[in-house]
Image 1 (tube, one colour):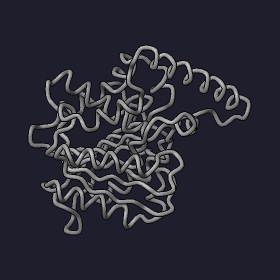
Image 2: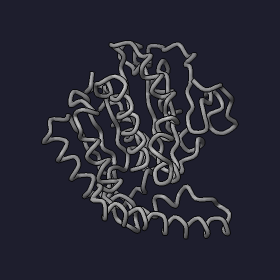
Image 3: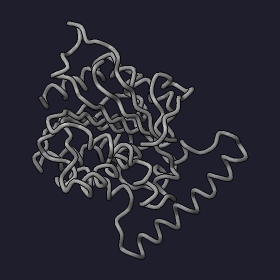
Length: 282
């Protein structure tokens, strides 16, 4: 695992593993108000949306630390560059510490995966593929939460999602936005000419691939009717596909919340859904 260093962002008490990964080592002793260690996750893998900063992800890590203080939490960020321009080998190398952490889990360990948007879902699928490559089996997920994902490939909505992680400086942002549109356009044309499946279609297939995610795990899809990046109908199509394949699925459609903004609208409902899904999986 990479040399540890402390982050000065929203995850100060986490250990920084590399430029896109943080992990905590719980010190809290659960009390009677919390689930016992035997019913709590051993590891929570949190894969953020494209451009999500550690400070934004810390809203979710803090929630999990309250719910399951005995659980380790592995928080991972993703950028547009990772998904579009980095090679497969570079992306696999970047998530190698996550694979090492997963491989260190005992056979009976309980794993909760929580991914956000298509970027987080893509990162999760990359981890699942790398795990299968090493172990020859699916990722040992007990329960999975899919927040605002998966969508379908649409040029403008995909560009909007990628743009979240562009530089804030107006000059750099404008330049990066132009390069992003050109680069993504070239990739779409190349994919069409080669007959390859597009980025989002591939992750939709991967999420319902039993070789990557076993049907024994439970799933919670959290999404919104007003999401401007991921249409709720695309999410419900995937829910129907997952159910038809035998996955145990719950869906919670929020009204009026923004993309990856459901926690901000109703935190009690959000965490209630997460704990209900987890308890269903046990």
